[in-house]
Image (cartoon, rainbow, N blue to C red; front, top):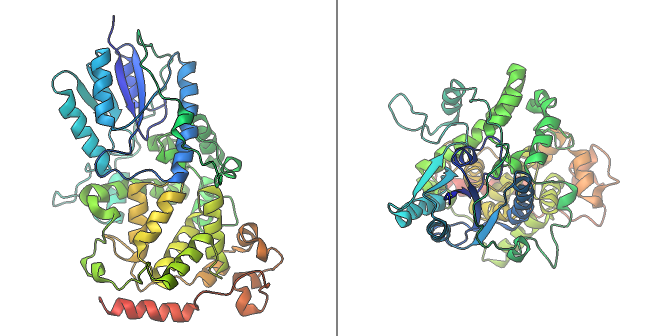
Length: 463
């Protein structure tokens, strides 16, 4: 009897360029395990949209594994406890996994090592990022805090190594442990089924990730402009595939970078993901606390106040009276995703027009985005709010109506705000001001000038 090697899966649901699978397969029988862990200390429970994606991604991975002669073992509970028990039951002396750096995964990895003692070893591999967080150092020997020098330093070390091919086959253990039934986890919504439209926009899984990458390759040279044009289909939409590890960032880099300087803007977006994780590694509380100390006393409007809550709910539902904001929030609800430029506009609106704490927006995005990533979500919200280590200035207040017109968002608005489907350009960007607002579309919940003045007044109190 040959003891199996356990592969512990988390946000690395692929077979290609997956170092844990490659190392385990070279040793003999492999036991792939995914643990739905909502119990590890400091664990941030996965949001609803991400759970929808997870269900379909696990189903796809199990299909891929069975084609290799293997299968996926599903368990639910505290990951360290379950993995240690499986290792003991099956005589596994090694558990292979990719490094994860979120605070709860660091806790789980530490806890697992302690539970294994000298009976087995946790072997961690790199592969979720272009470079392991903490690799890059400034001239003084410390980690980077500012993005631009981080990008320059990382870019000097590119390209990454070529992607590893998936194993041709995976040997099975002599006996498989019991596995949960995926449907019993209830990851999919039931009544109401708010995700019923997701399948029109997404196909989770490794093969779909590869297909999406190939569909984007020729568009990558247009990304510098396309990332700002919500009415055009010129962004990659790879973020959920990348978040769940259905594709490695190295695979994306090596497929895109050969087109030269024209794709640099897109490559910088991939590096931003590395940068965000670099920030979280330095400041684990970044997801729940403003980095800039003066903002910890910022006079945010209290969301427990009914009026403020009403404004927040209007933002969540896409009922603010600002077409570009409402289109973005409705796209988010309907698809679990939002266009790059519109993410910035909607986040800025909540923070600066409504003067609501960035953390409330971050929580909503965490629950509704299929690509909700702890590091990227936290860093992006703190960038917009001006509270982050490297962020936009608070006093730079986006004018959503101007942004909408500047980036030709008319068709995007008509798609997601049906009340405005018959309003033509240029009136659609501000139908209330132009007199083209139909009765079915609500008026603005606050005027731009009023909101801007209120935001600047609040900022003056902590300046």
